[in-house]
Length: 294
Image (cartoon, rainbow, N blue to C red; front, top):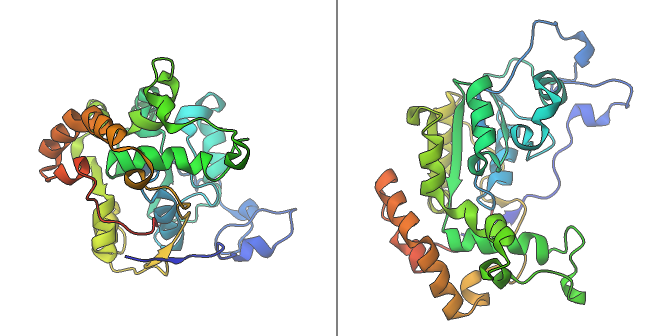
């Protein structure tokens, strides 16, 4: 399904204000909010990366019953900012909350970092967790391409400055394996999450279902958060954070490497099929529905 570019983020009334005051979504100075109006998240989107999380974050910004920080689209407090304390977390990311029923944030690191899960379970024991998963081979290569083909973080493919994807399978490339391939062991991550959280408070969605029927996919997400499930965002059919050319592993990698990646993920995919009650065998054949990444 071809998706149009979403374009720049819409500016809110607070974007037009001067820098001296901070404003909530309704244009009211945060300084006028009552002190008792404090809030920490009641839902977290915990991963995986390169599975339309930026698109879903933008959808949540549109929904009148949902509050998420704007920006960033990846907070990762319980991974990289926990030492700053919960008061800093609330003050930095949730000061603009204005009574929305669902309050959350997006952090793709939470699913794969056990200390973050332990911290979340300690401080937010009743939180709802959502995850989106996709073909792990495609997700791994997109994770690499997002940095390297876009020339981020000092990489410059035009000048040959970068790390080949194949380095992840080198005997000295374990750090790249952890960065690009390890997040795709979904069954292993979910099994670990279930040790800390009630599975009934976890929603696992598939990226391919988003392409097949985005409205039904979002309705399920909204129902899980107990917000207006009939809300239809303007982002339906539009694209956020698009993939760069050359991001398809089945076109860019050798057949031999693809076969090796299938062997790496096979056992985990088979276990995930049992956990979700879904046939995911196409993840091991490369037949996931194609289209522009939301």
